[in-house]
Amino acid sequence: MNYRDLYLHGQKVLSDAGLAEADLDARLLLEWICHTTRHDLFVHGDREMEEEAVIRYQTAITQRAARIPLQHITGLQEFMGLEFFTGPQVLTPRQDTEILVETAMKHLHDGMKILDMCTGSGCILLSLLNFSNNCSGVGVDLSSEALTLAAKNSEKLELNAEWLKSDLFSELEVEEKFDLLVSNPPYIRTEEINSLMPEVKDHEPLMALDGKEDGLYFYREIIRQAPPYLNRGAWILFEIGHDQGEEVSRLMQEQGLWEISIIRDYAGCDRVVAGVFLEEKNV
Image (cartoon, rainbow, N blue to C red; front, side, top):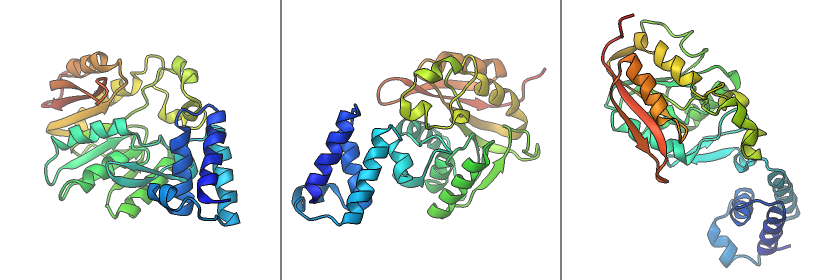
């Protein structure tokens, strides 16, 4: 079987399975296995394939047709122009989250200390460290598996970061003060999880999805617990669901944060809420 025919076979299997991006996924899996580019499909489509590559490709196509995410098959995902290891132990880095990083970079200065709460793959913290100078950071997660993967990404990108297993702030030292807090916490309402795409509800870790009954649990807790760990003037930035901007803004206002703003993504949906911490609220 030649390169083009193998691609067409994969495309048909994925299309028959009902995948909306069958063409793209079939091509990306073939390029991943053969270490080729899109150019090869047009220029070298008649190249005969080795049997081992054919078998590997057919296996990958079968997995994708079963709605296993493409990134879980390849173990890789691009984010902010960087390549990250990913897998079923973490939420797959998504383009939407790049809005959080881009917004955070507007408030990031050389030498700052960054806290990434619910770090997962570490893609947010590592991207910020990559595009800054002399900054340091701590990535916090409750999942040991996620932290192991984050550490692998840190090594892959040759970026130094500290990874801490903690239930939010429980294992952080109060003396540790941060200049920037970023978080993409679980924010899906529990009752909505079963309505998500199979790639998400069946293959992403539930811990990274479930924001409890109203989807706001982790925003509420992070905003409430954060002040003792922040320097005056520290920014807090969250990724949010498309309908959570006003509610998360209200939680920030109640905690006494200033300059609160909602940032939209490229589709025009609310995606990030940001606010600045000036002083701990009197209780």
